[in-house]
Image (tube, rainbow, N blue to C red; front, side):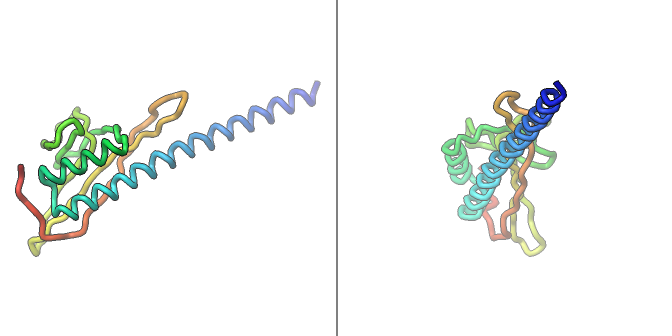
Length: 148
């Protein structure tokens, strides 16, 4: 009887380690997708020299094509963009946005953008556990400062 109890405990311990590994794998996969999305958004902003109606539409089309549906709250001082329209607005507390951006100007008249995309820690049985942010910054460039 002692061997049965010991093997049951070892079996439960193995199941716990398998679940921990599955959680870690889900986290890594979601993070890598968010990181890839962030890099592509930064590339589009740099290519079109800022965020305008054209670049926001291209970014939103890219995110729709990648099945990016994660939303989150933007910090103060950021603009938020939702995928259902190509416009942006000053981020408000309590609102969920697909991604956020902020433009910063350097002393020599150059501009760079800081963006935030979101990713979820989503487990198959449990569902959404937490939402995290992935932040990125473009290179400085002589950008388009026209607002639409």
